[in-house]
Image (cartoon, rainbow, N blue to C red; front, side, top):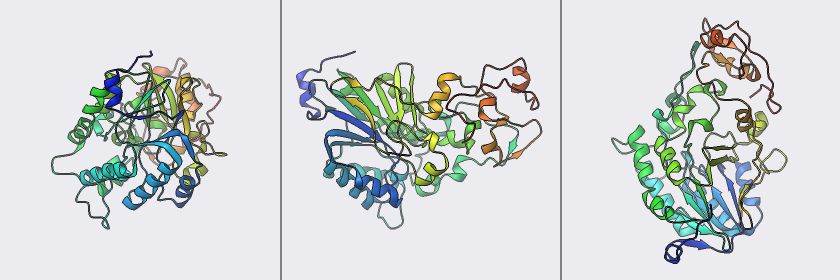
Length: 380
């Protein structure tokens, strides 16, 4: 639906009228030298705006270098921080992650990077709105993997829990709520009017934007990926597109009328070991470029990008209560207990045969009807 902004709304919001296209990328991780070279080699595109949905670097000086590099190349740069950006280093003077996040926002202001809602385009205007968020474990509402031993908690594995420092009492839901509260002014502005609306965050607003636990190398990853508060806010804002990052599993799917896109650059070793779960649009093994989201002549890009896991869930529904089955690439990492089962990805998707109930109850020897999705090879 196309709505007109009143003049007073436009006067209070930053406008980039010359922008003709919006592109997006997340998780650029320039602490990897190859990723830094990728950023530095991007061509100048002053008619484009770019969304960078978090995880640039844990080093403040590299964040500044990337901000200056991108503002020299693009007509507008939008940013929200990710978990790596909030790490507190011993060679930096931030007392905690909140102070560093605030310093990043000030750095963005000084270098011309937008961390607040702004309007791009002229004949057709799009509001682009960064959303601040942090994850909490209660975001995870699906059953845990069962009958497998040795699966560590996210807190044990993820560096965030050692490198991020928070004020006393600011943990879990309290932390996620405090970060979401920073978005209140954005919601007031965006509720007025728009042509198109694109929001973005680093973290996930919905659990459906991640493969089910049995498909993940770390099944407990869902404890540290998303925010219910973010999800509620995205639902209220009802954007045309919401861009996210964090999981390094690229995505393009529409749920309840909102299109969700992840276009993570990720690490070079991930492109070597699991390229299929990263390829999306022009961000692929052969040619890595930010993904086009919006154009001034037509609005949001109409065609859905093919991505391995979003394509999978377009064919097959989630079955999160299938908790004892793991695919081979995950099963090799953990110890099977009685009643566990190992089946390739295409062997535990519905429709099931008559042994469905037995499979769900742990009948590890029961077979599922095999239906192989065209884009799924059953490997990671």
